[in-house]
Length: 305
Image (cartoon, rainbow, N blue to C red):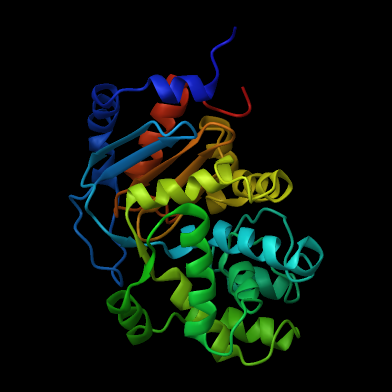
């Protein structure tokens, strides 16, 4: 019988994980911290969880960080599960983007139509569909659901949210204005506030791996139809302009955030969560990408192989 990705994850030990993690430490030297999100540049941590509950963690495992854009696939999954694909894809497409994740120009070119749910325009638009009359209520709806289906303990990081509110993101304000003009929603400030809150949900690598397991197939309440859809969009769009290149090198559905967090899904096998706040020019964690590439190639995890 052939050895599967699930078998390889279950056979992995902490010593091998440590060797891989330390072998790519030098990659961090090329990265930079996002100024508006102060963090410790020395922090680096990874958690791996299989569907059979084989779990490993290495590094600064107690570190906490905001999800930022890593929340986007889970926002999409929640809305697909609660509203259905027809409603969701009236708001956003599934086309990859060749421009930065916060591009106002692309949204102008596309006449107010967000290309996919993994960039800011798509996620801001989808945030308008969250239930609730306030930003806090909308955020809580998503947070409670994610904690319920994954066993994670996401909380709103009030300190990070205060930093976000103190340094307005003018690209996101421009995106929200264009989406409002295109008729996607009313009350643009409410929508932007809701988006900011869900991005400021705080987690750890072990809880992020638990979230990833939902997309890997851990929770039987989540049907394969929507899991496959979200994973497919992550594969082609989850790393912004680097998505196509990383699909070739790593071959896994992945999502990154400017906090330095990253999650990779091995469908029907497990999930990997990584955190290091030093970013490349695209906004992806340099150490996390290097480590995921090492692991995927060593264990032959690519879904394309």
